[in-house]
Image (cartoon, rainbow, N blue to C red; front, side, top):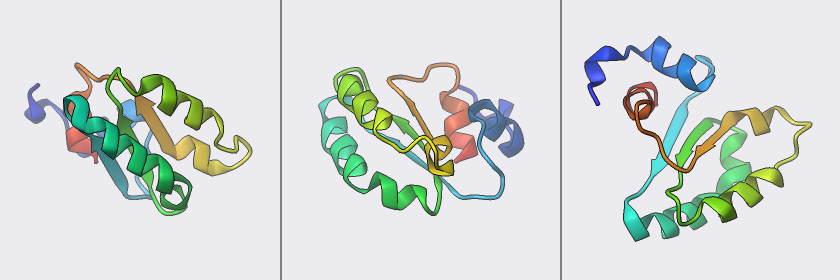
Length: 99
């Protein structure tokens, strides 16, 4: 992962992020991600009113987080502000640079 290959505009474009709003990157490591994922899910609707979120869940919590994502009201613009992935590989540099 070479951060030098990413500039802010290109990194945000990878995830379809607006340049108008701040971005929060949320990720944890191994089993520690579970408490982070659960905490984010509790406050997600409130955060989405003010920012965009790139959330990397890890594989363990992916089914639970995916189910919660489906509960977001699709008729609001807020559902487009939440970008969630079980893992990122090549795009991890973009996530770090664009957020």
